[in-house]
Length: 143
Image (tube, rainbow, N blue to C red):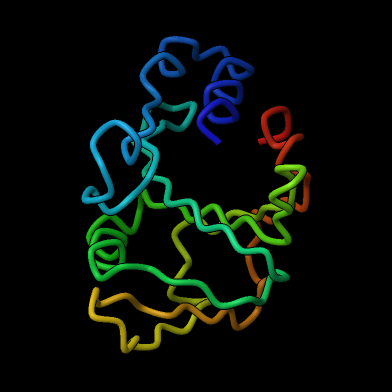
């Protein structure tokens, strides 16, 4: 996903911003509340949380309390990249993007986990206007 963000910015003529895209979760750990820091072609910050499941697009997934709080505090710049039907043997699947509308299309359910995670049930996965049903292998070229 990091490379797809960089490639998308380069396609828009913003190689300066592409160089600044960072995989924050890998570099700093999971405490930031998002996985990737990127930018829009206009230069606005873009905070991306990537969630992956092997199930279909309606499969529930978890967000930590920190992720939920960060998304609420940065609603105008948070994006959820939802990967599903992920096949570990081929590292492929499909992905769609929620931007600024997670509360509208998802239902937050308190989880019984000691880590204070929230179970997310997708109410209408087709509600997102930024739906991308593409192979994760192709997402580098499509997003």
